Image (tube, rainbow, N blue to C red):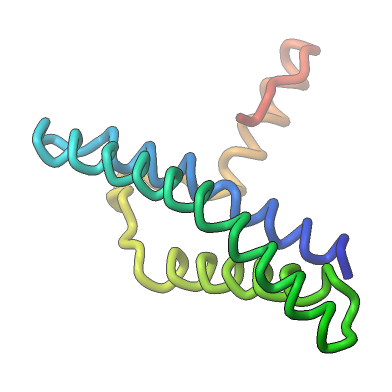
Length: 124
């Protein structure tokens, strides 16, 4: 169960970099500054409230007879899944249609470059 939660948490962790990149690309400096401040505030609140919530639910789950780490882990899973769903459903696409490249074209270019140069090119 713990491994499953870590995998889902790892998938959701990329959202921080994604949100930072989106905010950094905002054209208005005032909106960019406000967005970066909101990301910092979210981290501060998360680092403060997260351990408190985990400790509270660990203590209350122990009094009900459950394993002490099960309830905080399930709540962390719920937050991660909710985060993933909100990003997936509500975040608008930032690339325009003329910038998007299909995966097939990237792999075709990679195989062509590898066969002509003999060197393996990194994908990202």
